[in-house]
Length: 238
Image (cartoon, rainbow, N blue to C red; front, side):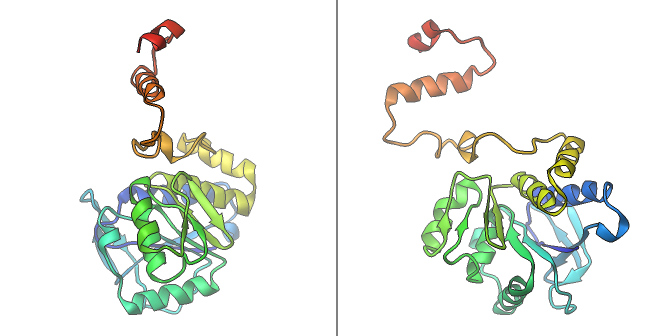
């Protein structure tokens, strides 16, 4: 299976490394003709610098060849919501998405898909901190801010950063079964399926402004003393 991960200068390293490692670990359990062939695709072949300063070697520019990818994922990055991709790139992305078996994004790579019109009428998610902006700027997308990843037909989108691992484990499970995905998750020492959604990581989603202030105090106390043995008396005191 030919997999393309679209990257750019300022990309979040974990948005790329997470999926790469899931597919690489899956390949250790697959025969040669079954394996994922993963390629980093950028504006042009060469190197891109991640937001943490690490450099990635990009083997293909998006216009270098007429390869049709089976799976195409757009990685995210801290500054990506402020970027408007070129019309040429968006046309390439639209063509690839039209023919790919599956396509999607990791983190706020969803903004790139949105600029290409590929999120219109679809259920999607992105990093919790960008969900409101994605919904406001692209109102035809049905943004689910608390989901770890979302599938809508051939479209897959994930929450922020490490959620790309969750997304790709789900893709592996779809391709080769749940048992193989569990084996990959064990190798990577991650959950095959996390409990809860993004709200457990977001200070904004977890407690709304209309929430009972007494319950908010208890929620905050428990979060700050999560390793303690908490009695009813301690919670009442808090």
